[in-house]
Amino acid sequence: PRSPQAAEVRVRPVPFNAAFVSRLVPRLRWDALREAAESLGRPSELPPEPSPGYEADEEFLRRLHHVLLEVEVLEGSLQCPDSGRRFPISRGVPNLLLSEDEA
Amino acid sequence: RSVGAVALPGQPGMAEAEAAGDAGLGPAAAQDGAELAAVIGATVPTGFEQTAAEEVREKLGSASRISKDRGKIYFEVPARSLPQVHRLRSVDNLFVVVQEFKDYQFKENKEDALKDLEDLVKKLPWTDPLKVWELNNSLKKKKTKRKKHNLQSPASRGKLSDGGEEGGADQNNTNDQEDCAQNPVAVEPTGGQDKENPQGVTSRNGVEEEEEDNEQSEVKAEVQASSESGSKADEAQTGEGEAKVLRFRVTCNRAGDKHSFTSNEAARDFGGAVQEHFQWKADMTHFDVEVLLNIHSNEVVVGIALTEESLHRRNITHFGPTTLRSTLAYGMLRLCDPQPTDIIVDPMCGTGAIPIEGAAEWPCCYHIAGDNNPQAVKRAANNISSLLRKNESKDSSTALGVPLDVIQWDICRLPLRTGSVDIVVTDMPFGKRIGSKKKNWDLYPACLMEMGRICTPGTGRAVLLTQDKKCFAKALSRVGHIWRRAQTVWVNVGGLHAAVYLLRRTSEPAQDTRPFW
Image 1 (cartoon, rainbow over the protein chains, first blue to last red):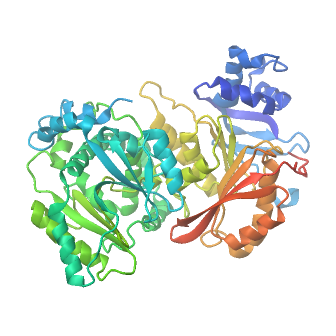
Image 2 (image 1 turned 120 degrees about the vertical axis):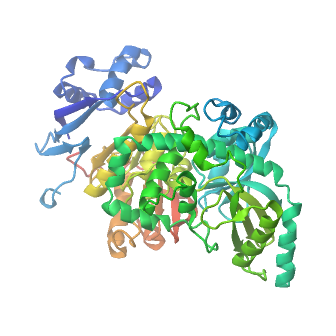
Image 3 (image 1 turned 90 degrees about the vertical axis):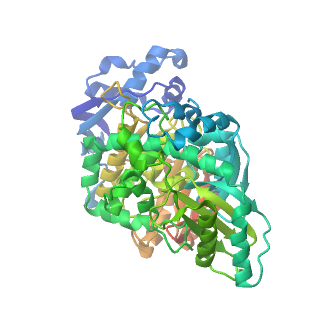
C-alpha cells in the first residue's frame, strides 16, 4: 500500500547515518517512495531517480534520510494501488489487517 | 564516558551526608578505585552463557568463565568499570565474588558440614569485595536521585496510573524470577525499595516493578554529576553516611544431591556466623548487604549481591501477559549477528521487547515490529514512547527518534515485499498463555512460510523462541526447502522449558503468491 494521506504529520530528528541510508537505496521502490513524499507535501526533496554516485552525495542522502526516517505520519491512511482499499494510520501505527472477506 | 567510580566521592552536596561512612571510605576507594579489581559473577538466561561471555569480552575486554552452575558466568574487571558492567545487556543479576571453591569437600554429617560453613566465614577475604559493594552503592545513589527526579514527571505518573491489567500482569511477572528457586525468602523487590523509602512508604508491587525499571534504565545513561537534582535529604535517608549498623541477609542456592543439609539450614547457619563476625543485624526484608551462598555440587561461591532487581525488564514499562525478558531478547538478537543496515522484523512482537532491545543496542539496523493484536500494538507503541522519553536530551523538546516502526498486521499476510528482510526474530506463541496448542499446528507452518517469503534468500536468518518444540519441529520439516536449522539453544522461560532456534534461509527464492503487496 502506498499513497499516504496524512491528517497529522510529525517530524522528529534522527541521527544521520550515511552508510545506513545509502545501503537502503537499492532496496527501495523509488517511484513509490517519491509518490509518498509527494502526497506528504515534500515533492522536491527526492530526484526522479537516484543518480549514479549517490553513495557519495551527502545532500541527497540527507534528504532521503529526512523523508525515510524523520517524517512520521501520526494520523492518516495508506492506500492500496490495486484495490483502492484504504488502511488507517492511528497514533503513528498503520493497521494493515485485512478483513475476512478480503483475504 | 567518564570514569564514574573515581568521580563520585568528590560530588558537592554529598559531602556532608557522607561524612562518617562513605566519604571516609570514599576517597580511599577512589584511590583504590583504579587498582581495586573485582571478580564479578553474573546470572544470565540459561543457554545464553556463551552469548553473555561474548558481550563481556566485547564491552569490557575480559574473558569469562562459564560455571557448571548453569546460567552463571564469572569475569574479572577493575572496580572502576562497574558502570559498564551494569550496562551489560545479557545479564540479569550481578554479584561480587568473595571466594570461589572449585572442589569443596562437604562432611557427610549434617552438623559437621554446617559447622564447616560457619567456620568459613572468618577465613574469607571480605575486605575488597566489600569495597566493591560500597562503590556499587554510590553508583546506586546516583540512580536514586535521578529516579526521584524522574518520578515527578507527568509521563511516569501517567504510566503508573495506567494501572488496571498492566498492574495485574506485573504481579505475575514478579513471580517469574527463577533465580532463587531454593531461597525460601523471595521478597527481593521490597528489600530494594525500602532502601529508598525508609519512612515505610509502601507501594503496590506492580508499581514498584515499573519504578525499578525506570531506575534500572538510568544505569544505561551517563553517571553524571547530578548535584542539581535530588536533595541532601535523600542522602540522609539512605543512612550510609552515619556510622550505622548494616543489615544483611544470606541467600543460599543449593543444587546437587550429595548434601546432607538444605539451603535453608545453610543460609541460617552461615548467616549466624556472618552476624557474629561483622556484628551486622540480620534482616530478611530490609537489608543493605545480601550475602550469596551458591552451592552447586562441589562448587561453592560466596558473593555479595550488586543488583537488587533483575535488570531483565529494563526496557519495558507496559507489560503484557507474556512479556519477554530483555536479557533473553538481547541474547536472541546476538545469536543472529545483526550487521549494520540489516532490516530486522519481529512479526509477532507483543509488547515489543525484542525490537526495542534491538533498536537500543543495534541502532544501525532498521527494526520493524508488528502484531495483529491491537492491545499488543498499543503497548509496544507505548513502550517505544517511554524509551524515547528516556533518550530525550535536555535541550530539545522532541526526543531523537529511533529506527523502529510498529505496524498492526497479520503474520500470515505480511505487508512486506518478498526477500526484503534480513532477519526475522520473534517469540512464537507457546499455546499455553496465549493461543492454544491446536492453533499452533496451523499457525506454525503458515508463519514459517510467510517468514521465509519475506526473508532474503541465502543471507537471511531467523531466530525463533518457542515452547511447543514438537509442533515447531514438524512445521520445520515441511519447509526444509526454505529454512535450515543452524543452532538450537535450550532456555527456561518463566519456568517453561523452551528452545531458541537459529535458522538460515536457503538460496531458494520464495514463490510470490501475494498479488496485493
